[in-house]
Length: 492
Image 1 (cartoon, rainbow, N blue to C red):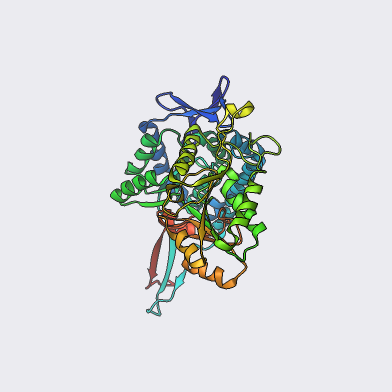
Image 2: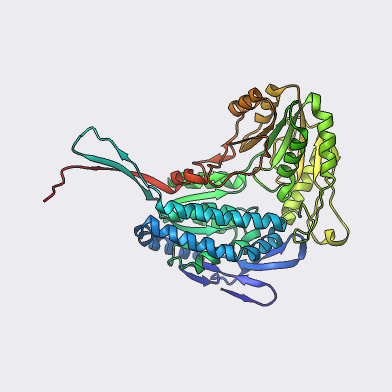
């Protein structure tokens, strides 16, 4: 599937074949830990390439629907087994391509395997319900039916897990797929698609195409053969996806990030709270849609909490994620690196106090990559931009609250509503938090980041649009309900 000189060139996968783009142009994927290293080249595809991929998916959808849910599930079991064999290689590629540490990359790849097996199991689960009819001589039931060709657009921060949690349910429920990953992690995505190809997936069922979002992404949504689009990425792009999909009247599903709060009450276990905040804020260099971004602390324990938080944050080792002992890797790209630095400077300008970190790391290997030390801002006001806008980097904004009611009010004072967490030992406090917080994912005495694969995932307000992802909830997006009424059959 590849031709290479120094770095490998990865091809599109269309109608069961690995093919170059029609213009024969490629884009390079850079190692953010060493910007002089090219991880690989991917196709800079054209609209004509995309049209071929969508046509292939359209032609395959009837066959794929008719082979049955159980057999479709068996294909996913095969893909999971192949991915498991290639776990180390794919994880290492992920670390090289987007910077997260190797243990994190291995964990994400293992999660992808588990997601595949979960949805493979859907092949043997029910796809409808029998409903009593008012007519005693009739049989009435529902069945789930696929929606057709699904476009999958994914970001760079989880290049294995996010594509799989979209592609796996789409396929098992009988749809065909055109998959466009972010260019920054397209080499990793290509290696995942290789696993599907090796499993013998029928031609046209899964198609993989790389290129710019303005060309491939927009043309995908606009194509009349596309029946649905699922997107994870920035709010700005997501709004455009929604408008285009709504104009065509097709299903769309958007996940667009968050400004996730963690509340620390005066009766919280501070050791657990510090550990949870650091993990939630700085794992994956803060490049998670569920990452902890705002920490709202009740006044009586504010100073002692901040002291402990700073002490532990200073212990974080930053460097190349392939090396032993490295806790946090670089920003995933030069663009993201510049965005993080911009917000750090903006925080200072707004009057917040940079308590620790926020430095551009230099010298030695740091000069080759996009490294920033984990930053903690104090004296943050709720309306400051660093408390309102998604940074997607290792930056914490600390805010004070007089009591839980004010803390929840501050937490809800944002356009986002993806995830939220509270650390408390008081049952009344956690129940009040569960009821009053505006977030799709609510976690108690745990970091804000993370969701189990069998549970619905999605947010409120500007964070998400459409039905939830993952678990059984995925069925709502990838299928339509058909109600069947039967009467008057003869035994003759």
